[in-house]
Length: 383
Image (tube, rainbow, N blue to C red; front, side, top):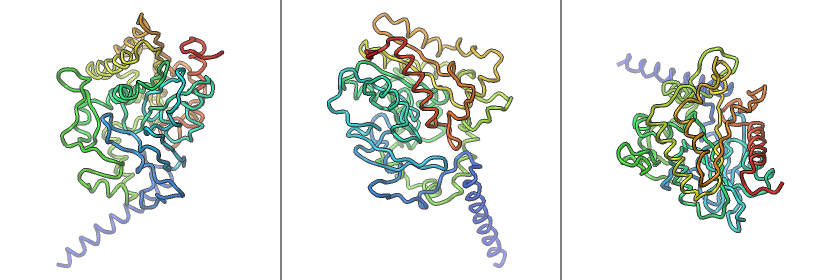
């Protein structure tokens, strides 16, 4: 029986060593994910809790926020507070809105992931244009089908037009049923239907609505590891590499071809589904003017810098569809491609520990978007 005891001792030492190494690697930001386990965070600071309590999946569009809540969001390179209004949007109250308001649709880039409210692109655009911009952006794998559903829910709010953030890096896959069938069937979120009308949302039978991102339908071991162990960062990083979700961790000086949906075309079905969702948003906008903003991530920029023909992505079906949107006679539609406005130094546009815009990145994007809107006279903006 002594060998059994020795075996368990070896296993225990290996686990503790792995945990210690994971702690050290996390502190030096060596993993793709370098988050402090929830048990080591102060989840109640003053009158607000950790962001995990503020994210929900209980509405038909999936990821959203708890209404009228203040939370803390922290990673190794930022530590901010976030507040959500009476409908769960990361914004001020939506009462008494003027008809000149604009609605912003998008994912975490629209939400303002990792930056204080006054540093988000939404707030800066709002200040520079002089009209309210209603932020309906959400983190948590928020794709075009979800943007359609949330817009249909709130389109009766006073507004004169829309700004839609498009992130090719993951918008083709965020609502792809087959991608998520092999990834996670427990999350309550909509997917494009595989048969019939793709815009009729499909939900996995195993998906259960949840009030926060701590709850799990099965109380899984994965959830426990993520909340209590530094090793979770190592395991999640390995999983990201296996799944190909690690594109944002790229050295922009590297001379190899990283994956980019700007250049590595998604499947025909993925392109078709994405465009159908945005076309439905245009129709739901009821002739209001719309601006689509294409957002490159670090991997897209690295690929762009190393392409001999940097504009070859413009021949793709999805890109040409955005161009064709501009030919609609019933409403004015514009496309703003931010990859065409890159500064000489692009590294500072993104957080060091994360693939989202830094405060500098938000300011860069907001400046370009605001000037574009004014130059195109897209909305009713006082000059």
